[in-house]
Length: 140
Image 1 (cartoon, rainbow, N blue to C red):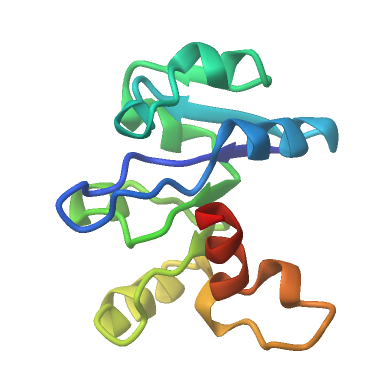
Image 2 (cartoon, rainbow, N blue to C red; image 1 turned 135 degrees about the vertical axis):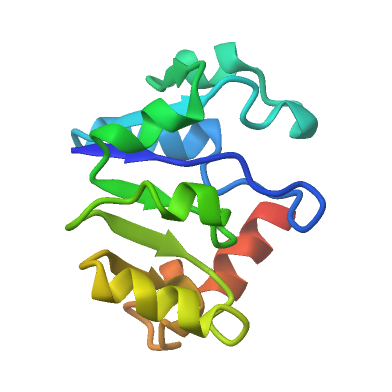
């Protein structure tokens, strides 16, 4: 399975959905991770940091979506990218469902599976995936 993440709109979101440590975890369970060039350079992570953990760096973000199974994002990608999503792809992220309700409904109509990380419950089994906990861990 192929997991990708597109660059976030840095005017709205400085964080990234996938760090080199996460690449290592995904790779260890058999996923292939593909990221755009300079994906997290603004946070001090180089392409080599990602390569060393098993990520594949791609020069064209358009190419990332072609054969991907899972797209992991914090914010909803731009309309240009949303148009390129294909049936049965999975979009996982915060995605701001209150502001992007119509866009998310349109993706569902196109049979794009949307998983909103912010919607996970606070039960113990889900705690490790809950957005406040995961982002708190990143912040220290």
